Length: 163
Image 1 (cartoon, rainbow, N blue to C red):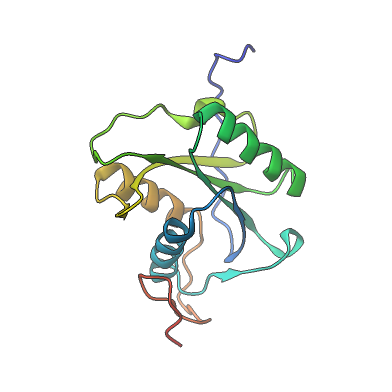
Image 2 (image 1 turned 120 degrees about the horizontal axis):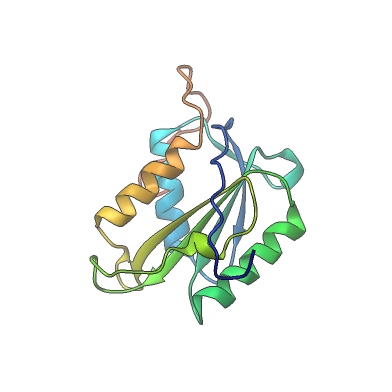
């Protein structure tokens, strides 16, 4: 397979609620918003401090130079942590236009067990309100099993602890 062919990978089965975060560059407010949304939908989720303790790795990858270069750096860091654990690679494209067409970042991914989503953000606004971001967030939530007895600490939509 050459570098221009797209290889489809089966999405991984929904996982339990322990995740480890890899942050490429500065994604502070973006990370806070995504995790806030995730915890609102799945309050039992728990961030862990070591990759060995997690069920899935969340990779926050804002594009600051070229998409291929930044995604390659994120994949290298991810594979250094674990080459086999399920991962969610969130690629953040800078734009003020919520309807901007961006390339499908999954075409750069040659790692199995990895969901790749593309999101739009603007530095003064954070995540843009648009269908692309809503779809991406929904896909991320679906990667985590729903549990009726959702325990653990609750986190509001801004990522702040409420209990």
